[in-house]
Length: 166
Image 1 (tube, rainbow, N blue to C red):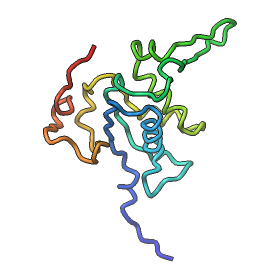
Image 2 (image 1 turned 90 degrees about the vertical axis):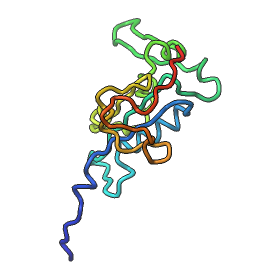
Image 3 (image 1 turned 135 degrees about the vertical axis):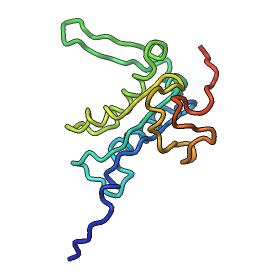
Image 4 (image 1 turned 90 degrees about the horizontal axis):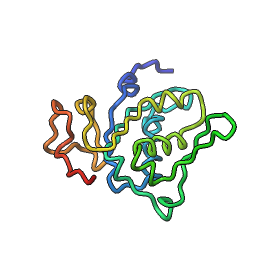
């Protein structure tokens, strides 16, 4: 049997992916993000090994949902005390904390095992276009697989800043 050593280290290297969530469907986007966080797009995928990549999501404020989910969807959390159930409607969550909507959807699509929290730590969600210090690390963009022509890794902005709709 051959014992050839290939470029396995390159396969385990973590890559940063950028996703613009403007006008994207929440469930379809969360499904794709979960696959990248798990590493299922890599040829070395193993369910027991954490080989996924980093994902940076911008413009989470502009995400779309289908049907009547914007009126019916509720986010629930419980403090484990009697009467401690808190329900937040989708519209209030979009105003208060839009990045938590994507994080919650991706969390539901990851397997419920010991690697789940570690995978969610590699997900960075921003409500607007500005990304701060993470801008220089992005290697892949999901629109067409390339970065914008005016991309400069020294700046914390990705291309041109879209107008603020607030």
